Every structure is written in C-alpha cells, then in structure tokens.
Length: 500
Ligand SMILES: *Cc1c(COP(=O)(O)O)cnc(C)c1O
Image (cartoon, rainbow, N blue to C red; front, side, top):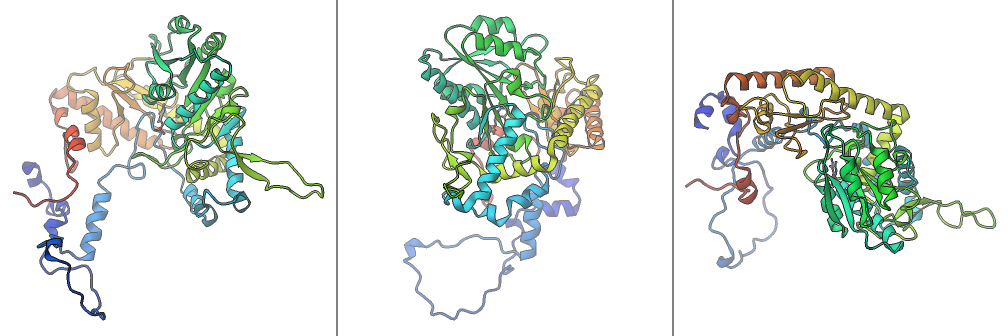
C-alpha cells in the first residue's frame, strides 16, 4: 500500500485523505448567529463526554470529500455493468420524472379508492401489459421482489393442490442451474426440493425429469431462458410431462429481456410466472432494493393470486351513474392473501408502466432483439479466448469459463476488469460451470462499449499468458485492492478511529 501511494500524484494522494485527516483546529463549515436565548446549565457531568473528536473542515472540503467518495463506487450510470442475471441496463430518466409526479409520489396506500383512481388505473393497465407479455390470464402486482414473487407463485400452486385434495404432492423439482432463491422459495412454501441435472447441451435432462414425475410431484420451477443464457427447446415437452403427472409449472421470469414480444411463457405451457420489474422493466436496483416481482397465472391458478389486485368495474347504477369508483383493489376469491403491507411497490410499478407505455410493442421487440444480439456478439468475439462450456447461440447473457489459462480464474479476471473501468460480471454462478463468468451486456450498450470490454478481456488474457501470477494481485488502480471479504462482513469498520 505504501509503495503504491508513493506513485500517486500529489493531487490523487490529497483526495484519499479521510475527513479526519483534513481537520485543522479552528476551521469551520458553519457560522451560527449569536445566541439570543438564555444559556442553560449543562446536564450532570456523568452524562457528558470529555471531548468529541469531530473534523474541523470547511463546507467546500466536505462537499469535495463526499462527492469524491460517491464516485469511487461502480454504478450503471458511470460504468458498463455486465452483471449476469441482474440486467443492469440503462434506466430511462423519464421513468424517474413520472415517479416524481406529486399525485403519484404522495399517494398513500391507505387512501380511499375514490381519491387514487389514477394510481389504481396505472396498476390495472400494468397488469394488462404483463398478462399480454406473459400470455397469462391474470396478474398480481403485490410481491415486492423476485424472490417474493416466487414464494407467492409456489403458494398458489400449493393452494390449488390442497383444494384438489392433493396435499400429498409436495415434491418441487428445481434444475441444477436455478437461482438460489428458487429452492428457498419452494422450501418456505412447504415443498421438498429435488434437483434435476442439466445435460451436455445445457438443457434440462428429460429422462431425469420423467423419473421424478410421479404421484408426489407438485411441480417444477423452470427458468427460461436458463441462467446459462440458453433457451431450453424442450420447454413445451417439459410442461407436458409435468402436467401429465399432475403437477404445475412455475416460470422464473426474472430476466425477460431476451423474450419480450417474441415468446410468451403462457403459450409454452407455464402455469405461473414471476417477472422482475426492477430488472427487465428498468427500475434502478441493487443493494437490496427497491423491487417488484409481480406474478401472472393461468385460469386455474388465478383465483389464488395474492392481493389486492387492481380491478376495473363495469357496474352501473339505475340512473346510469357509477355505484362504485371505476377502479378498485380487491383480493381474488381464494387468494393466498396479502404478501406485503400494501398493494405493491408503487414507485416501481409506475416506472415499469411508464417504460412499457413509452416503448410500445415495437420497443419490446427492439429490447429482445438487441439483448440477444449484444450477448451473441460477446460470445463470438471472446470464444477463442475463454472456454465456452455450452457452444450454442445464447439469449440475453453468455456464460464463459475462465479455467482455460492457469492464473486467470474467474475472480482474478473479474478483479482486473475493475482496473479497466468495468464492473465485474457475475462469478461462480451458475454452479454447473467451473470458474463461471456470467456476462450480461444488456440491450442498452453500444458497440463501442462492448468493443472496449472485449479489448479489456483480450488484454487480461494476454497478461495471464505472460505471467501466471500477475492477475492474482489485481486490481491495481482501485482505492483498495484485494479485501478480506469475510472480515469485511464480520467485522466492518464503520467509523473512524485514531490510530494506535
Ligand atoms: C434476480 C433473480 C431472482 C430474484 O429476484 P430478487 O428481486 O433479487 O428477489 C430470481 N431468479 C433469477 C433468475 C434472478 O436473476
């Protein structure tokens, strides 16, 4: 660290100083008017500290310091962010403008329907959009994240099975490439999980599926396209096998940017699907929120949807006057109930509605076309350098393996990408690929950005070829290099302490 600091310019070094190190006695960033109220005695000395070490700095210094800190992070607004399965794409600013419209932004979830007709209409129309996009019968916007959508979705399956008197069906099949939330959601809903392997093409092994399709089967949770970025061509056949055995098919639609306007999961035979509005439909996300994970269901599962859902009433009074407001929020007849405190994460719903309205049908096709084109461009340009475990056309993302060169494992390559100004891809997932680098360029990146990324990965490969140990110390140009991630989680240093 000291050696590296020596190579920094004086200016860069100056910017690294902590706020406490900038402190000079007597310097101040505030000027208070003289007191015009009587002085009060201080509390008992036992309640007071002897001294409180606060930085003495000017306001300008504080602004510069925190602005600098805010720019040390990687974000989708500052860097290419190819984090597979997370869809870190450009979020149109127009969405933000809509989310800030006072009538929407200050609506309260407990307000009477009559006062928030516009907001409920937005929800109703979004439900219609999502039904159209998934080819399903009904939608609920209530779940507040993808994982919560999964839980709600598998609970509708459980409710339907219980109603049929088939409570013995408790086996949920989950492919070995699935996102970790899938087995967790199934277990929370009271199912036991059986893992289904992928075959050499990266599809789900149909024989393994057939073997498990018995009288215990509750269903399967399929991700289409899979987390390998692959479209499983056997989806229709898988749905048939599961349905014939008496089970339901759950679709993890967290990443729909490859299929928008082209494939409807309902038409393939899926019974219930969740969508991540914060990924596919452009709400800024990361760091745990905010999100929305609406679910869409076919006719059979719709009565069980979580609620409340937005409805449009056609009721009219005798004089032709409306008896009730046109739009309302209601629980479906056999609803699994509420899954959160309100009818949904409205700000996220509004952004998704804005995004879909703005782009329209042709825009949806452009999204999927460009998402697939960009991912395949990376595949073709990088396949000579990095191992491609499943050599097929991909959908919205491509999974390489970094195991080809000694010294170029997934972690090392990812760390070195930071020096090039790129956020790291998703690493070590899906689990079936050794040293996985899961790269999702998204549809909003230009060819120039992708070319710069390709060039960076080409340079990194050359570095690994020259010196097997070189990448193990990357990154070199970030404020800190390799961190002890376990210690950072277990013993975080959240405040400044004087050394020694
Ligand atoms: C992100 C993701 C989820 C979970 O969504 P959250 O909103 O993070 O809960 C589930 N499945 C897949 C495939 C995902 O990419």
